[in-house]
Image (spheres, rainbow, N blue to C red):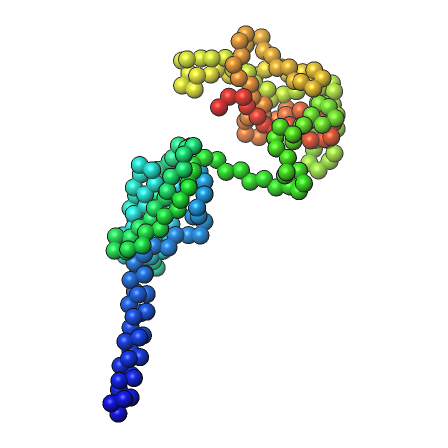
Length: 228
């Protein structure tokens, strides 16, 4: 009997150790799997950081000079929002910790900026200075729905604008619509109202119409701008 009791008590002691460890671990945060080392946070907008911990846990999110707090709900989920961030060239760690936990989560090498998703096949091996958008030549074209692009040489290019420096404007520029003509592999943009242009844009408006710059391969020119 004594032997059996000794064995039973020993088993109970062995079982209590992992259960206690599990209870302590619940106080430590677990961030969503979207947050990984070498990630990029979106610039110029609030950034949500979310994860799970023990219900009612006090969480602190730290990034750069910002520190935000949150509390998990009954479901153990918590979310904090970092204020809008400026683009950065130097990486920094993003840390999430619980007031009662002992294992903070650190996401290393985090930058702030823009994220671009690219897709393709063999062309994805090329760098921009190699991706000649002129193709077989520039033309004025028009396209309706899924119909093939049609060249319309008698029509005018639209959606081009030029800007002059204007210190009175909070953005430092004053824009005017401009004329554009194709000259070989170049588009010449001009306006009688602009004598010393400092920037140009093409189709940088919502739902542009008149954007008729194509190449002879049938590909349209994407919206672009020369200013920041």
